[in-house]
Image 1 (cartoon, rainbow, N blue to C red):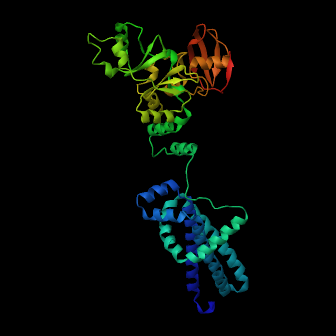
Image 2: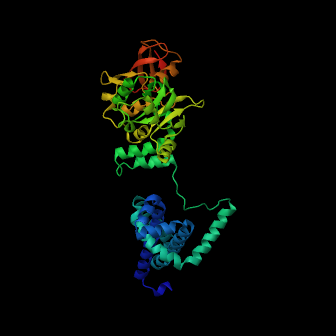
Image 3: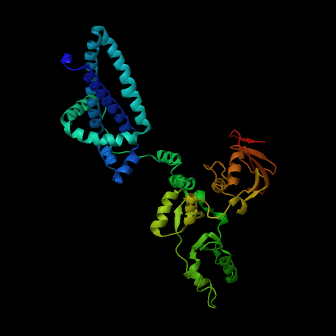
Length: 427
């Protein structure tokens, strides 16, 4: 039969077979290299090639069966054709040489090169290929179906079960990695906000609350003039109302309610007490993600944090949670926060009651946050005692010098910014 066909025609058919082999090899790599989330997005926008590719990838066993059927068919045909061409040109000895040349040609031009190109630009190759594979799969479906059944049966014998290929859910850590790597598509500010949202489950109300001893509110045992002074100086729209101390809380007052009563002659503490709302309590350790949902569900903006014994530990507000996502609502905290005073380019005087998370966020520091919430607590935990002024220690590469203390806490410390090998030592 080969003697009746011109040599040029045989070579032409061989070239076509090699091009088909390159197509099958490259398109297989391209389809399997597609980003499933980008593919899903393009399919939802109506991209025809993306929609067909997504449909094909829902059953990868059938798609691979189709590609392998076509690839093996053209490769075996090319091998037989090379044997005929080589025999025509040089007889039996030339067949072995032709087989070697074909192997190198297929390896370079029909495997390595197209697969590398497909891996670099998967969408450019996969979407046009899907337009071809989709109708081709319909035509060859019986053969592909039998091949798929046989291959799945072999895998079943080895204990491999076919999973749900339609599920491509990301874990939280994987999603965080995706956000970090989207540097060219998401601005740094938005990327930081997305990461903060993902981290809300790791942060609890204890980390952001105003602690018990720093709560500012209205003491009903004070005079009316003193109460009005507290209201006038308040930076908040809601204040807790209590007797003697916050442990005896009466309720929460929205200052807007008191606006119509504040300057009337008959205004008194009894009137004020009627305007308060019932206090809203949340247990310590509640994740911020949960508390945010609860604030929205109950239409609350402020809550009292209590421990397992019901003792009030602090106050958390909706603003505190939002600041965890978007950052502080004020300007440069280093210049406007009384807890942190810059001494030089590398040293800062810090109040011992300063919240570590707020310091880290404001100053871009990395002090540990998995233990005590305040700088005083962190120092005392490391030293296991109340230190004397002048004591120095090093925590996670930050040099800390105790400046002032009282009987039960560190009042002020000096922090020097100099990243070294993380450790905790006492000078």
